[in-house]
Length: 226
Length: 88
Image (cartoon, rainbow over all chains, first blue to last red; front, side, top):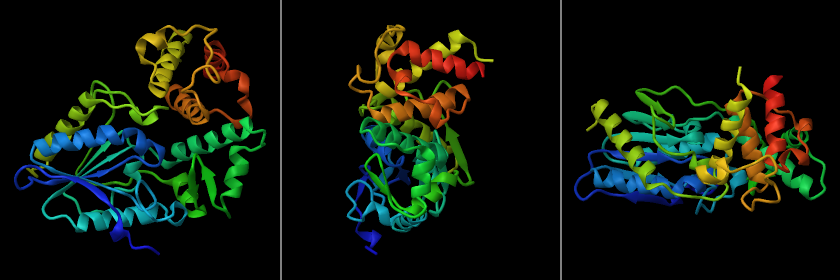
C-alpha cells in the first residue's frame, strides 16, 4: 500500500501566526471538482481573516498516485485523521456534502458541515449515470444489476473505479455524530448561494465563498477557538 | 401535498441548479423545450443528478423501470412525469 504521507495538500497561510487551522474536507468524487474553485476562494478569505486553511488530497483523488480502487471511506477517514495530526494548534474541520461522511476521526476542536448528505444518494446518482450512459451505448444495465456486480468486482462509475468495499460503505454511510457541530444548508438560514456541486459544468461563486468563510469564522469564535 | 404549480417551480429551480441555466433561461423553458440531446450541458451524469434531486426535493422515489428516454426529451415530458409521481 502506498504511503498516504505522500499526498499533496493545498495550504493557505495567513500573514502572521494562524488563529487556528481550518481543515477542509471536500465533497466526494465529481462534486469535489465542481466545488473546488469556490472552496479555494473561501480558503483565501479565511487566510485573510487570520486562519490557516488546508485542503488535503484524499488518497485516490485529485493529484494522488494511489489507485482509487484501492481506497474506501475507512481509508479516507484515517487519512484525514493523519492530516490533522500534522497540524499545530487548534483545528476546525469544515466539510461539504459527502465530506461529512469521512470527517469525524480527526482530533479537532469543532466541526462545521455544509449540506451534509448520506452516501446512498451519492452512490445512486453515480449508478444512474452509468445506467444512462450504458443505455446510450446500447448496453442493458440497471441499478440492481450494477450493485450485484459491485459485490465482487470493481465498478467504473462516472470515471471512478470503485471497489466492492467502497460501494458497500457508500451505500450505508451517514454523517457521524461530532461535537461541537454547526450544520448549515443553503438559503436564507444558512449559506447564500447555489448548489455548485450539482452543476454539470463547474462554476464559481465568490460571494458564496465569502459567506462560507465568514460562517466558519463566526462558528470558530462561538466555540471559543479564536 | 405538492400542487402542480409548486412542482413546476421546483423543477425549474432544480434544472437551473444542475445545468447552470440561470433564472432567466430556466423561467423561459416551455413544454416543448428540448432537454437531453438539445442542451449540451445535459449529459448522462446530469440526467442522473436531476433524477436524484427530483427524488430529494419532491420527496418521491423513482424506480429504474419508470425511466425511459422520452422523459428527458422535453421539459413538458419531465414536468408531466414529476406531476404524476407526486400525485402518486
